[in-house]
Image (cartoon, rainbow over all chains, first blue to last red; front, side, top):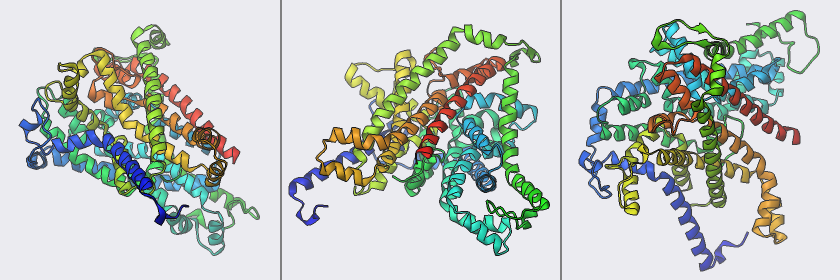
Length: 284
Length: 312
C-alpha cells in the first residue's frame, strides 16, 4: 500500500469528502428515526404545530408521562418476559435438535430443515387465521403460556439453522475423543461442543429476541389484554377510536426502539447471519 | 440416560451392538423430540387445520358451524376479481420494492465498500441498519405521524413543492407510493448489508490482479467482482422477494389496506377476510395459496444455496 506519510493534500480532501458522503447516507436513512426521537422530546403544541418545529427546548415531560401511564409498564414487562423466556426455550430446544441432526443425520432431517424455514416464509396473516381458531378452541387465547410457546416455535427455525451450520463446522474428532475418554453424550454436548458454538448461540438469542420484541400481529390477534406487548399497545392506540394520543405514541416508540438500536450497535457482526436466518455467514 | 452406549461413535463404525444402536436411536429422537413437538403443535396442526378449513364455508358472523363445500372456495378465488387484484398488486409491489431496494441497496453497498477506516463506522452502520430492525408497529406510527396532513413533516415538505397540503394516505396512488417507499426505506439497507458481504467474498488477489492489469472499473465490476458476488447477491434478492411477499404488518398500521383496497397486499387481504369479514373459509383458501407460494420460494432459495456447496 502507498506509504501513508506521503498522502498529498488532494487525497486527504478526497478521503474527507468520501467519509462525509458515507455519514450523510447513514444520516439520511436515520432521519425518520431521529425525527421521532426528537418529537418525543417536544411539547404537545410543538409536536402538533402545522409548521414543523426544528429548534426547540427539549422536555422530558412526555417520556415521564409515558412511564407513568398505567398501561405502559405492564406492556413493557410483557415484551421482556415473552421475548426472553420464549427465546431461551427455543435456543435450548434448537441446540439439542441441531446436535442430533448435525452428528447423527437422521433420515428426513434435510426435509425438516426445509419445512421449518418454509414456515417462516409464509405471510404472518396466513399463519394467524388457523392459529387464532386453534387458540380459541383450546382456550389458550390471551394466555401467557400459549403465546410464549408460540413465540418459542417462531424462534426455532432460525436458531436451528444457525446452530446446525456452526455445529457442522465443529470437528467430530472432539466427540470421538471425548467418547473414548469416557464422557457421555450429554457431557460432550453441553461441556465440549456447546462452548464452541457460542457465536451461533449469541446470534440466535439476540436476533430472535429482537424478532419477538418487534412482533405484534400474533400478539394483537391471539393475545389478550394481560399479555399485550408494547407493539400491541401501539396498535391498539392507533385504532382505539377517537383521536390518537400522538405524544404518548412518539414517546413509547422512542423508548421501545432504544434496546434494539443498542443491540444493533453491539452485535453488528452478527447482523448478516441474523437477517439471513443463518443461511449466509460472514461479517461486514 | 442411554448415552452410555460408548460404541456408538458417530462415523466411527466398528462394533455396534444391537442395544447400542437402539439406545442411540432413542437418544437421537430424544434430542429431536422437543423441537418436533413444538413444530407439530404450532405449525403442522394449524396448517392442516387451515387446509381443512379451505374446503369449508365458515363465517364467524353467521354463527353457523363450518359447512363442507368442496372446492367452491378455490373456484371463487379464481373468479373473484378482488382476490386477483390482491395477487397482481402483491406481485407488482414485490417487483417494485425488490428492484428499488436492490438497486439502491447495492449501490450503497458499493459506496460503503471502502469504509473500513471511516471514523465512527460502527455508529454510522448502526444508523444505516436501524430501519430494518424497527418494530413494524413503530414504523406504522412513525409514518402515520409524519404523513399526517395537519402536522406531518413530510406533508409539510410536500406543501413547499405543491403549494397545498397533501393527505398522502387518503388517496389511492399516493398511499401506494407511501407504502412502497416506506418498504424501500426499511429494506434497502438490508441489500447494502448483503452487498457488503458479497463484496467481501471477492478474493483480494483477483482484485489486485485487476489493478495491476489496469482493468477499468466497469470491467473489474463485470469480470472480477460480479462472478464472485452474484451468489450472495442472489440469495439476498431472493430473501428480499420473500419478505416483500410477506409484507403485512406495516401496511396494516399505515393504511389498513386502504383507501379502498389500493394497498391491500396478499397478507392484508387474508387479514381483512379473516378478521374484518370473519370469513375463515375464504381466508384459509388464500392462506393455502400463500403457503404454497412460500414453499415454492423457499425451495428456490435452498436450491440456490445448494449450488454453492456443490461448486466448492
